[in-house]
Amino acid sequence: MSIPLEDLGRAVKQLQSRHHRAIDAQLVETGSSLAQWDALRAIHRNPGATSHALAEYTFQTDQSFGALAGRMLDKGLVSRVAGKGRAIHYELTDKGRDALQQGTRLSHDVLAKSFAPLSEEEREIFYSLLARLLGAGE
Image 1 (tube, one colour):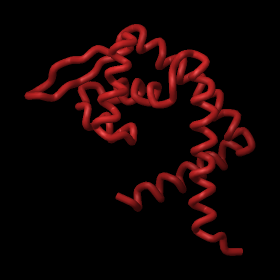
Image 2 (image 1 turned 135 degrees about the horizontal axis):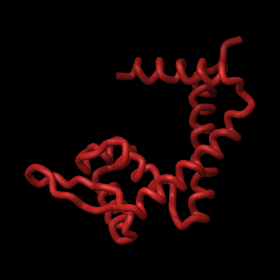
Image 3 (image 1 turned 30 degrees about the vertical axis):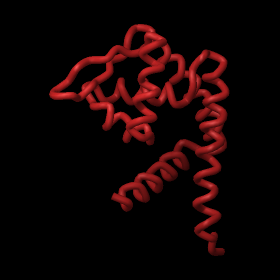
Image 4 (image 1 turned 45 degrees about the vertical axis):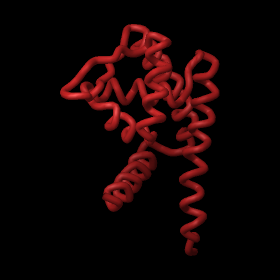
């Protein structure tokens, strides 16, 4: 049986969309959003990264990330740090670290439920296949 490539691509997108909707619904109840949590995670994982690099990491435009960062500054989740030249870096505040931890727990719960039908071995195979496909695109 040959699976149409369009169906395969749609299934990947559908799973991603399901994850995003479920995680976002959980985060909204805490006063946060998926975009905000993802930005906090990117800042935490990439200390000293420029706004441009963080925008790319979070799949946003520079302008979108700048607007999101501004909202996070207003909420006291991040602080702005001057870098070399005109570069701007962000650091998490204590409030931002708390929001990141809470979002990570909620995200983990959603993903654990989603991937529960797969065994540990199947999850490893699935991940290795995705990694191979992502590596092929570079």
